[in-house]
Amino acid sequence: MAKRILSGIQPTSDSFHLGNYLGALKQWVELQEGNDAFYCIVDLHALTGEIDPALLRKRILSSAAQLIALGISPDKSTLFVQSHVAEHNQLGWIMECIAGFGEANRMTQFKDKSAKGGADSARVGLFTYPMLQAADILLYQAHYVPVGEDQRQHIELTRDLATRFNTRFGETFRIPEGYILKSGAKIYDLQEPTNKMSKSSGSAAGVLEIMDTPEANAKKIKSATTDAGREVKFDEKEKPGISNLLTIHAALSGKKIGDLENEFAGKGYGDFKGAVAEVVVEYLRPIRARANELLEDERHLVQILHAGADKARTVASATVAQSYKNLGLVL
Ligand code: ATP
Ligand code: LTN
Image (cartoon, rainbow, N blue to C red; front, top):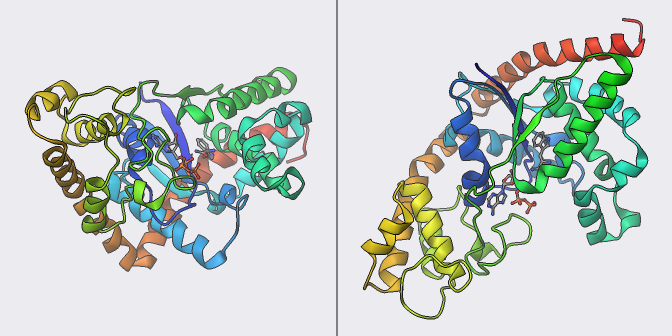
């Protein structure tokens, strides 16, 4: 049976990176087949960080173009921008009124992010972020929420809030489940292969960006940190750099890691890196071109997003109406 899928990604960088794709977005593309998928660019969540209006606008559009270029089809999935569907704010407030201060205060993402700039300067929106995320999910009565391991705690909170609401005010929300790939491709920084590839903490040289030029990405791979020895072998402990490159090659070429080890037996790291660079560059080339093409016609891109928002609103408004009614609000 088709399942309702919901996920979101923040438009917080000019380009998604290969970790975002292999760890999360590739699953989004796969899950749109045979399911009823809703994918949301969570621009309101992005307001919890530094706000640069011109940059934010550019990144929302660029995120949409990249998602489509990576394979999210607006015909198969409902692709939309969170701020286009006001119901997110409406249910977000309800969730804030259901959540306890103590449980919100236990969210590790808030603790980590607020600790960076000093807790007093953290904004209230960063604190209430998980309640808005719960609203994102519950509005669509999602069965599954494909996310990375780091989001497990927010999904648990969402389930707790939904259960509490249903128990106290009557059945309103489906209790969603996280769809978290345990062994999902976790991609590491090319320069520091024990840290995850990340928009915020990685060095630019260690992050393979979808919108980067082929030359830039090839150069990053060729100067990736490798390990002692010269054998191309998967060993995350002793050879994190080579293992990361093997993971990337295998994920994009569809080859097995064992077969790649055999293919490069007796050859040096240089040959291997050249092959990885070619696989990455050729994989990303049409994606980048398609994204750039979509960005050239901004009106058309916005039209696609508005159409997605219209579809999303139909589902979201029914959930808000039901929750208002159950709360005793006069409709
Ligand atoms: P930030 O550095 O700002 O935390 P990020 O690069 O970690 O950003 P997110 O926007 O937090 O990216 O994550 C978007 C999705 O990509 C999440 O589902 C997350 O689990 C996944 N993801 C991010 N980095 C990686 C990675 N290196 N390997 C696999 N998956 C990743
Ligand atoms: N918090 C998530 C982004 C996010 C999300 C969502 C993911 C916001 N709303 C709803 C899944 C479902 C993150 O930082 N990756």
